Amino acid sequence: MDISVALKNLIRDGIVSSTDPSTMTARVTFPDRDDLVSYPLEVLSHGSQDNKHYWMPGVGEQVLCLDRKSTRLNSSH
Image (cartoon, rainbow, N blue to C red; front, side, top):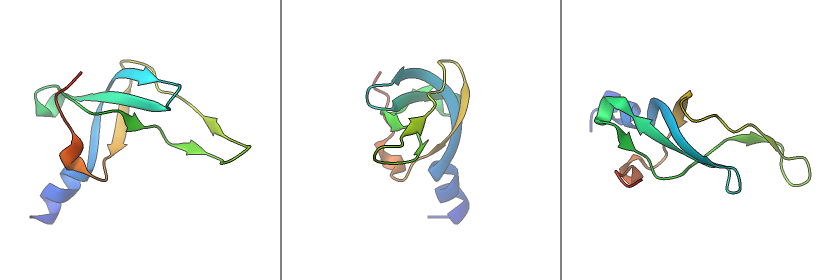
């Protein structure tokens, strides 16, 4: 696979379509892929154990996604 194609699939920008604060995940719609919706993606946080702090993006916000296994993107809602 061409490295530029691999990177394009690894790092994507999209629009948040839903969030689940209880699991710290968000589903993202990718307009450049015919509005494909991701599986629940983990939202990054800083801190661990007792000092967890995170910010959930809002629905409709543009986000940058790092998908370590880009084959897991799907069209399920």
